Length: 381
Ligand code: MG
Image 1 (cartoon, helix red, strand yellow):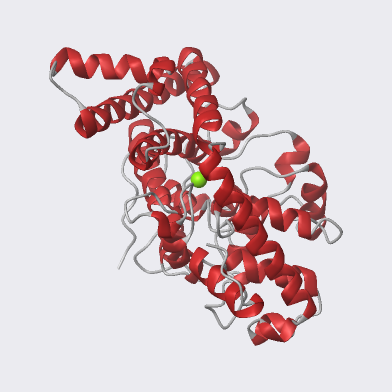
Image 2: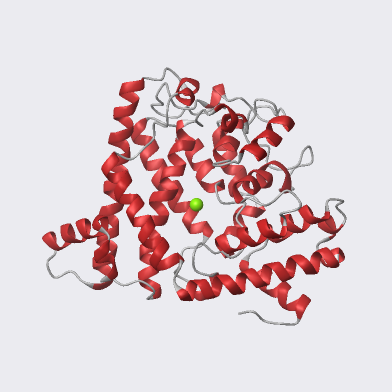
């Protein structure tokens, strides 16, 4: 049996036969490339299945049709692969990074990350990107030979999207020239990792409009304030003057997504032409190359600001956020007080605070609510 090569990879793409490898050496798989194998390991992981029941913006119990971390990750993978194919980048690596990029997210979305960071302020803090790396490097328990999923360097590099200087220095000490290095050296990650960052932004901007309108927290009238939205809604009306309601919304979002994908492809091609990186490593030394055009960058930022103001800070979302924060901070205190209430693997660990943070970060929304009720006798939602 032999591996089927990735079709039409550009020279600047990440080639799986040139991977910087895994932390624990493993023989190659007979039929799959290294990045296919990464992707498969992520899909079969426990943390990946938990994404079904983790909040993106709306809590899991608020409605069946809202995005969860899982469907968000699938949308990021779809957008990422689509763009990767056009640019000759490695689709398997893009898919692996996209599916793993939110594995470290806490229950209850960003509210959870803020609480855990606060609870951990004297114990090294908590940051969801770093936690995603911890999940794939340490916390998954699926192999006899090592902790974690033992992913390739390139997948791990993509998972660690942001990193503070302090955390980068710690990572560098544990793994010289490893995934923390670029944050100290000021270099870029692979083009596939850069692409996943942008695909993440394209995905959540679009689906948060959809979910926002579905929830009734934002209206089509409010969206008049967003030029990017108005542009594609008007294009829809040009073709279908009678369009209204849900189908008008979906068609507008569909057009907006397509145009953003084409914009990234065009802008990135132009930058690749200008910088001409010979290979994946040369691309890491260039400025960020996977980008929107300047006008699309501004339009996307404006949309983000709108969503921040009107949706993420909506009083109803704030109320949920406040309850979520209470649930997690009380859970944290309860486990620190009574570690035996956690699963034995966590209860036994010597680094108690980190063990509690890992345990809570891994929870789904509903498990966190159940545990909170069990330990405090109160129901927060
Ligand atoms: Mg994301």
